[in-house]
Image (cartoon, rainbow, N blue to C red; front, side, top):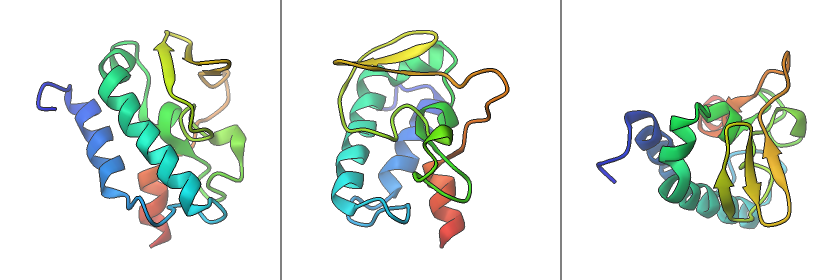
Length: 122
C-alpha cells in the first residue's frame, strides 16, 4: 500500500492500530466493530484514493461524536454506522448497495476520527 497518498495511508494505519477485538466506543458491540473495521479497511483499499481526491476527510468518513461516540449518529462519518461494502464514491456522497451516506450539511460539524476518540478514552 506504499502508493497511497499520505492522508489515505494514515487512515489505513490508524484503523489497523485499533484492535479488531475491542470496540473503541462504549455501547458498540465488539462483533459489530470488527465488521465495521474490516469494511473501513476494504473501503480504504478500494476507494480511499478516490475519496481523498474528491476531498473527503477522516472525520467525514470515520468520525464519531467527541464525547458520545457512535451513540450520536449525527456526528458519525459515513463508514461508521454500517458494515455494508461501498459501491462508489462521489463528491457529495458515498454509495452503498441500497443507501448512501452524505457529507455533513453546512453548519454541521463532523465528529472526531474514531482513532482519536479511542485515544481520548484510554
